[in-house]
Length: 287
Ligand code: GUN
Image (cartoon, rainbow, N blue to C red; front, side, top):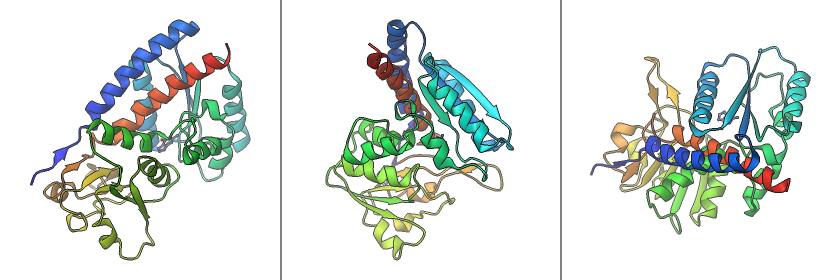
């Protein structure tokens, strides 16, 4: 059997088209484009690529992007002062600080310094709480992108067994919660899980977010399963590869996301959607 390759780039393009239409409508209502402020600290090459992609997407969607690139030695106080200034700026709708941050800065403090209504990353504890209880906050972009992909592909989630491999705050934990919201039966596995292979093999839907190249091998997958690969790993020969052994897995599963061109582009597309939504909600709140 040969799997359907889920084209994240194409799905992301559709989401960005819709975000652009909505951005134009919001702009007409508020007299300016929606605006996203992106803060990056230090020189991490992967973070630089992600931030550049976010800026490019803003441009394509009719969203103003402001970039604040701070040196590695920036103190926590300096960073918090900048975040606070952007948070109070009425012309800014969304604020995000690219992670990871240098070790001397508390990610938790930075995330909590952004108001929940400008937290387009969906990382603030208030938005995390709303995600858990089903309220209307902002959802984290990568996990929300996974759900969007499944919907777009018409893949049923209700009653299905979903195994999430990885338990990070950015992907694993929220992906599990969102799949639960979609009525899947969810198991979260991680580096300390006993009998990982047997558990993953039960899954109708596998979400791989471990950060280790080709960690999920074909023998771990149930034939016909759907595989969403969140990993972006660079191999010694500089090529990118996911957390799943794509070539072998695609011989046995029914659908799978490639790396690159799978989950990656969805993150930025969902960020555009959240930013336009932040502008819309703020405009409504100020009426
Ligand atoms: N680092 C890796 N993924 C993300 C993300 O979605 N948002 C931010 N701010 N940093 C990240």
